[in-house]
Image 1 (tube, rainbow, N blue to C red):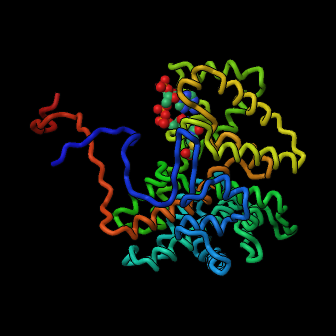
Image 2 (tube, rainbow, N blue to C red):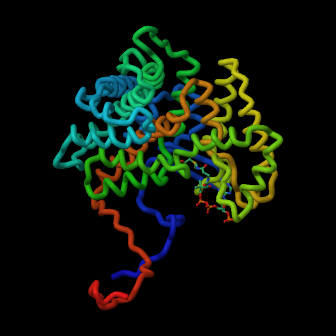
Image 3 (cartoon, helix red, strand yellow):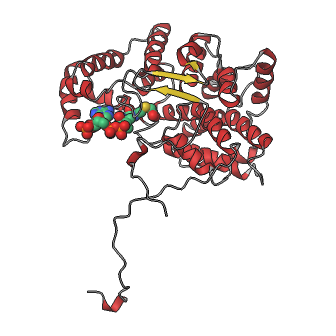
Length: 392
Ligand code: CMC
């Protein structure tokens, strides 16, 4: 057998070849299929455009855009039987826990003998991208005990998400165009980020030719952790805990203490050693959304001051720690009325596009092998079994 190199946390191991997303961590560059993220969000790029691009490699022309949007809309409903699953959860279940279960359950509704068939792979991705937002909104509605709202075909993906979250039989919710665009930009920003932990999880699960719906559920499980997608929820609790700008210095001292496991949530990134380009856009949208809603949130001032102090502190400078995408997103989402427990779910809804694109790239790759890392064994050498009555 071959010797293996030890690379804990895979900081320098390339696990695949990919044509989807490029990151230059030193320069703070993020490209989807070659297009800078800033250009995508500042232009007419919508959910459909970005999802088509990530999934198929090129931007759609007018007809392709229309057809893809129609196709997505024709798959937003979920099987009525699946709705029964939601009834089984405790009423205070975290919506991410519900998502792990119900997205995994989709695998019972869609079976195939050959996930590597291009048509099978494509339709699975379309179904997942279309249905995960519906499941996410239902997870929220069940967690607050409200009736389910089905998607409306006249709405875009982002508008529909807001509509399914906030409409009610007694009062129809009409998505505000500015907030719907902000939601769409947030979704596009989170769609893909090359081989992050959850995407790698999806690829590893899929490498055994497992059911893709189950693979996406594995990605959701991984995303839930506070070091990954759960950070946006953790940032808000941290800011609430700090409570006032006058306590920032004290909190930062705690974060810097090597004996304290505390980390500044929403700060630092494995790949970005400069400002996360998504965080810059997120900060801008947060200001726009709060201004539009005429919301004055002291937590935003606290976040800005925390960022200012951290970026001039030697500890953070030496380690190249900058705000990441999660630092401002929570403040923005909360102002839009999205409950804290749904922050990571929204991340999952958006990242489903990237997970699908990455899964499809892998599934259709010729000669793809099962992911099977090796280890450095540090346990006992061979020894003789001791019967129970002979053990001291
Ligand atoms: N606050 C304080 N110190 C930090 C932080 C932080 N947020 N992040 C890293 N460090 C320190 C760390 O203690 C270590 O110091 P030393 O060299 O003295 O031991 C050094 O910086 C390098 O850290 P690391 O743990 O080797 O970095 P990593 O690449 O393994 O971890 C990370 C990356 C994102 C998990 C980490 O920065 C972190 O825990 N950040 C807070 C959680 C967070 O915001 N996560 C969201 C990431 S972006 C969205 C996503 O991917 O989901």
